[in-house]
Length: 182
Image 1 (cartoon, rainbow, N blue to C red):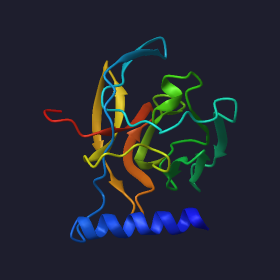
Image 2: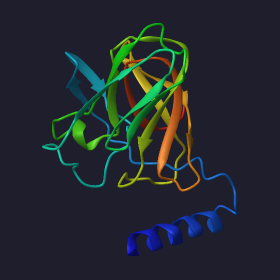
Image 3: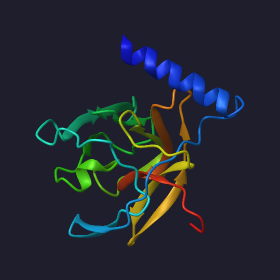
């Protein structure tokens, strides 16, 4: 109950400081490093990170069979994909994988799969912001492809606890600080 009260007070303070403006633009630290992932390297510059290291021995994989005509969702540790009815061209086992190493495991990164799956209509990806270091800069959902992060935009819910954005296909995604110049 104390956590909820603290969170409510923090949100109220943010709203007051922002002059009741849109709270959909919080921010985070920008580690400047590359690390190995998926058989290559990934730039971690600007990728949001958790304040502490998440439990890497806990569940780091989720999958669910989605009937294309019905749609559905898959959720894992606050990461989620919502798939509208008809977005998939065929029934598919949809997966979410979270990093298991100490470097990537501390970042707001997830692999949504099957990798490369294309959608007839965009799906919504959601990322947990609870326990994430936010420093006030705008944040966004981004996709790692062709050796660079591609901005997908996105928004933060009114409580400041979830970052969401849409995508036309599956890949590796992360929450990141909007960096000047791209």
